[in-house]
Amino acid sequence: MRSGRGGDSSETIRQRVKAARQKQLDRFSSTRTPCNARMSHNQIQKFCSLTKEQGDLLQQAMEQLNLSARAYDRILKVARTIADIESSPDIQDNNLLEAIQYRSLDRNLFY
Image (cartoon, rainbow, N blue to C red; front, side, top):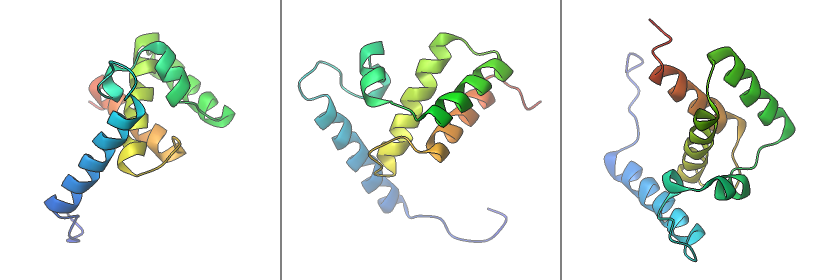
């Protein structure tokens, strides 16, 4: 906002979100799961795989932020959704870091 650069238009963002939702519908078409937020633990393991380095990063964040196993699953679901919005077949480092940041903000750690 301070830089004065314009962001993406609402229509551009709308199209990205629609495409991400369609990816989720396709991903779960043979199940009763409607979207990433409703993934079971087994689905998280299948669709949210991480590299060793990403796993180490997430483990470090879990320890430093004192997060629960439930938070671990939520971070992975959000990271998968961010990757879907970016049309990435895999969770990228920046997707994982963004999801961790959202979780840390949710815990009011920046006051």
